[in-house]
Structure formats: C-alpha cells, structure tokens
Length: 252
Length: 291
Image (cartoon, rainbow over all chains, first blue to last red; front, side, top):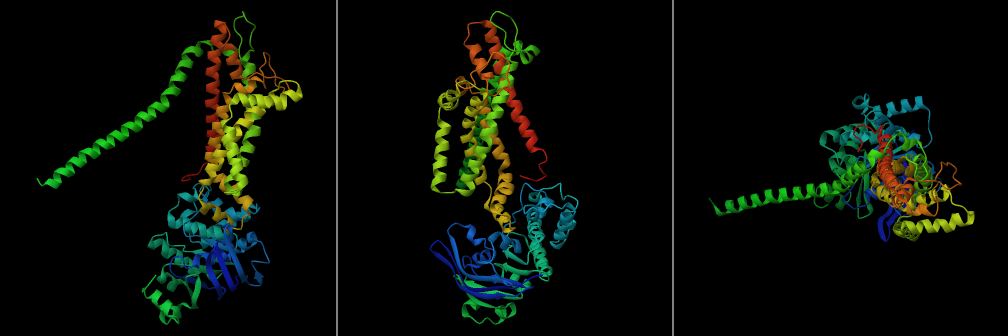
C-alpha cells in the first residue's frame, strides 16, 4: 500500500545556510513526482528531508512537518523507522562492495534481524524481478559481488535493495545521471512500472526525463518551491515566469 | 624540416628518457625495500639452519655444557604471550579506531584519544615493560605470562587504533548512506557495513601490530621474565623466543650462539607463517569482482 506525502511550512539549514524556505506541497500516492531546478536549488536537500537523511549531516537542521499518510515523520517516529518506510536510491550506484548480489538485496532485511531463509529467497527474487535485473543476474546471485556489475545494473541492484524492505515511498535522487542512455531508459521504464505500487519522488536534472516519467513536477529555485503542478502544465503553460525561463533554457 | 617539428622531436626524446628514468628509480626503490629482508633471511638461514632439528622444537633448554636441547618452551610461551596480547590489543584497538572514525569525528575527546595513541606508539618498549612491571608485577609480587601479554597488548593498541581509523575513513560515505537509507540503525551499519568493507585494511593493521610485538624483547624482560622449563600457566613466568634469543646471544658459549641464530630463524618464519595464515583465512570467500 502506498501513501501520499504532505509537506507544510518546511525549512532546512546547513549551518547558517538556509537551504529550504517554507516548502508546502502535496505529493500524491501512486504517482511519480519530479523535482527539477538548477544545481544547488535545494531539490536534493528536500528529498533527503523526506526520509530524514538530511539530519545525518551534523550541521544540518530542519523545521516544519512532513506527513506520510497519517504519520508525522518528524515527531511520531524515529529516523530509522522513517527510512524503513521510505526507501532511497542515490545518484551514484552504491552497492555494498563486500556483498554478493543476493546479500545486497537481502541486506536491509538481514541487518534488521530478519533470518527466515526461504522468505529471504522469495523477497530477493521478487525485488530483483521488480527492478528488472533478475534475468541478468539469476545465475550469479551468490557468486558475484554487487560491485562487479555494470553501472546501470548496479543502479537497478540498488533499486531492488530499496524495494526489498517493502517501503511505501521511493525517493530517487538523480538515479540516472551517472548512467548511459540505454541504462537510463531501463530505469525510466522501471519507474513507470513501480509507480502502480509505490509513491515515487524523483529528482532530475534532465527535463525530458521529468516530462517522460512524472505526473506532477515541482520547480525549485534558490531553496524555494516556485511552482508545483501537473507535468503537462509545467512544460506547456507554466504559471511563473522563472519556470518558463528555466524550462526553455534561458538560465540555469 | 620545419623548426617546430625539430623541437617536438627533441621533446619526444626527452619524454622517453624521463619515462625510463622514472621507471628506473621506481624499480631501484623496490629492490632497496626487498633487499634488507632477503639479506636478513639469507643470513639467518646460513647461520641458523644447521642447528635446526626436531629436538629444537620438542625439547626444553639443556644446562650449559650439555649438547642439544631446544626451545619448545619458548615457542609455546611466545604463542601464549601473543595470544594474550592480541586478546587485549585487537578488540580495544579496533574499538577505539571505530570511535575515532565513526562517532567522535572532530570532537575534543577524539582528538585527545588520537593524540594519546600517537604518543603511546612512540613510547620505547623498555618503558612499557617497566610500566607494566610496576602496575602488575609489583602488586602481584611475581613475574607472569599475564603481565607479559598485557605489555604486548598495550603496545598493539595504538597501531591497530590508527590503522582502523584510517581504513574506516577510506570507506566512501555513499556506503554509509546506503545502509542508513535502508533503515538500518547506525551501530549496526558501522559494524556490519563500514567495518566489514574496511576489514582487509583493518586485518593488515592487526597483523602489522602482531608482527611488531612478536619480536619484542624489552617489554618482556621485567614481565614474562623467561623460564627454563615448560609452563603454560599464565600466572607463572614464561619463556619467549625473543627472550631466549637474547639470553643465548649474550652468553659466552658457542653452542648457545648457534641456538640463538636458529631461534631467530624460527621466530621470523613463525611470524611469516602466522601472518600468511590469517591473510589466507580472511581472504577466502571473497567474491568475484569485489574490490
């Protein structure tokens, strides 16, 4: 079951740097939502706030509320619990290098004390199938290291790893920016399939990508959410001059 | 021929020369690194191999004047001392290294611990022996294997701490974030992910510390003390290879000199064997493509 995300009056800082100003938005369930904007505009900071990874930086601070479903993730639960329910895929593929493909996918459950072997087998197979990687790796599951795969395969492995803990929301921070076009296309296909089961938030520098995969798009600039609307509206008839300038390439 | 072509040919020749020169220096340095070890080993073989026989490994020392005898008690004693030392030094060293790299980063306590470790690393081993003598041997009123093991263990701590810290800091932050992002508690991520990723380097650090203290004589003089008979009681004085070599080497007897050479040869072989064994055991089961 997936849920929507409700953000209100959200602010974030790195030391004295006010990185996010009064963010308010509603991210609907079972859709892909894209966040676009120039480098340093706060979109990565924002997704890192949604699963409380932001605060792993010792100088980082945040205020405001973020709810997933009925749950206020900043006051009702611990960060560890939040991250179990909100999975994340990072910009650069980061499989655990000492682990096999199987162990990488099983890691989230195993490190939380889950030991049932047969159930793990099923979860690993299902997650790898979901991430469209199963056919490529099924013969080497326990023989090869996750780090031995190609970059695109590694990223799909990381998606499988995130799916294995059965999150409700999947955050993707520029998941295809380090990949070639073929691998990028595979990741985009994947997002298309996954959004029937998960709420997906994807940060991207690539506006075509946002247009291809997302129902809704938000435009960030200098730490503020300038505009948030249906992707179609943002790319064809933006309400804000700055959004129009950005998507037509006049700055950024 | 145009002038710019001439200069480019001269540059080309220079580059080839510089390339060969740099390669030459690197090869020479490599030889200089290997040469002392090979020389020491060859000399030990030359001096000590003829005195090696089964009795050397199975018998305890004979009194002066009697031929034969061996260092069985010293070999066993060294093993016990190093086991005690590792039991103390490895967990504390790794624990402190984890604290420095993962929890104390940049904090005052971490800087203090790091400074202490560096100073401890520079304490002369004879001073370590005297310190443990006054802390353990004097209150107990007798020499013991235990006090010798503690002396070796304390010497291992700073080396292991600093290498563990360095190796953990080399693990990319992306790996830590991956674990935290899966909803893994921080302590679990540190132990099962970060430390595991750094483990080849951490193990190398432990082996360096082990090899270093395995040949130490000074810290054992006032602690383990030495023993002419077999003992496995950690509350009694115990023999050790470096102590036995030291006693025999400064004695006036030719027979003992020969045994000292043999002992040195055995010590260095045992160190090489144990380090290789640990390396073999810990690198088994490493996966294809894992860095």
